[in-house]
Amino acid sequence: MESYIIEWLSLLGRWAHMIFGIAWVGASFYFVWLDNHLQKPLQQNDIDRGVGGELWAVHGGGFYHSQKYQVAPPQLPGTLHWFKWEAYTTWLSGMFLMVLLYWYQAEIYLIDPSVADLSKPVAIIIGVASLVIGWLVYDRLCKSAVAQNDLLMAAILLVFLTAVAYVLCQLFSGRGAYIHFGAMLGTIMVANVAHVIIPGQRDLVAAKKEGREPDPIHGINGKLRSVHNTYFTLPVLFVMISNHYAMTYGHEYNWLILIGLSLAGALIRVYFVKRHFGKASPVTVIIAAVILAGIAWAIAPKPIAVQSSGADSQALFAQAQSVVQLRCSSCHAQVPTQAGFAAPPKGILLETPEEILAQASTIYQQTVVTRAMPIGNLTGISDEERGVIAQWFESLPR
Image 1 (cartoon, rainbow, N blue to C red):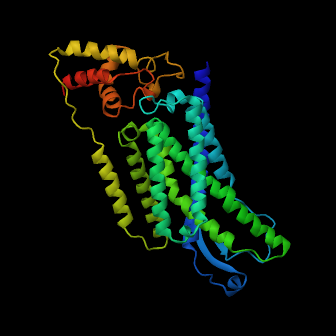
Image 2 (cartoon, rainbow, N blue to C red; image 1 turned 90 degrees about the vertical axis):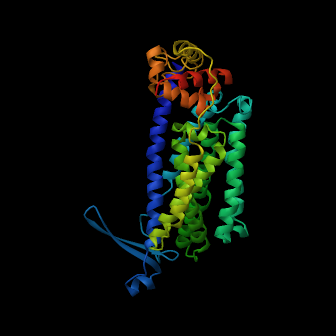
Image 3 (cartoon, rainbow, N blue to C red; image 1 turned 120 degrees about the horizontal axis):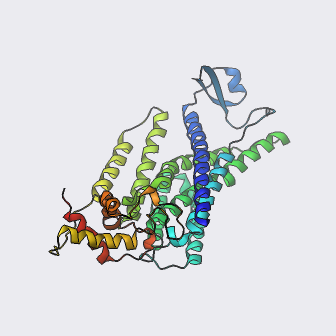
């Protein structure tokens, strides 16, 4: 019953995380687009009132007129809409999933003894520390002179994130490392909102109410952090779906693949931001495409040398079936016996000879090529047993 409850909590948590994430990303992308499309006000009285830019748009059968003040309007309106709960609820729902899946069930999804034989408390402490350290380092960089140079800031961040990805992949399962890397970026993004953007906006509002001159530094700092957030978005979105693609997190160089895909995502976002200004160069998209193509080529399955045992196909299948039933069927069964599973992952059943033969390619890909299964090597499959599966698969008619 516990596994069934966890399955439902996971479903509801993912659903909520996706809904809140769409709201946050949608609002973020829109305001970046809006800010980059503002034009000089057409009316002199708008300029005199402190309007720095405006934009006319049509959507859903209606006309919209957006204006942005250089600092703040002469008089605040009665109703002022804030955009913060989209970020907060996305982070809270994401952390709910982190706690439920990767910390509460760390022995399944986070710890892989073949990577590092960590105890559950130690693994959780490392996971929490990665989120805190990520924010502290990033925030310190933003408050230093480094932030004044965009290229230098990007280079230092790339080095830092590469180091984080490498360390996480040496400590956690590939899947656990990826999700903590994404959670660290997501934490940075929401901390930017909570500790920089929203406090700055509050001070601007308070200044107007108190009759003092608003400090324009809040707008400068807020925009800097918003720009960083928009470049973090696509890497985070990749991590959110990465658990479906063992070819990435299950690879020997999973940390390098993670950085490559994150860099490609950031470069693609750079292109679209520049495109807002009508100054888009295809260079960043070309570089991103080259990175993606390079990763696809580098991790493509290579032929695995299999020594012939002289056994016939039936004997090889019998050996492979024995391994699958011993190491895989406890999860991939109509009623899983492995703790933590209420249903077979992805609905794949590996109980009967027919089911095993139908999933031959998947079994080979997951246990031999990516070595991502059994997840966290819960059932203790050996290299020799992986070799048995490889030998059986290679014997199958093509």
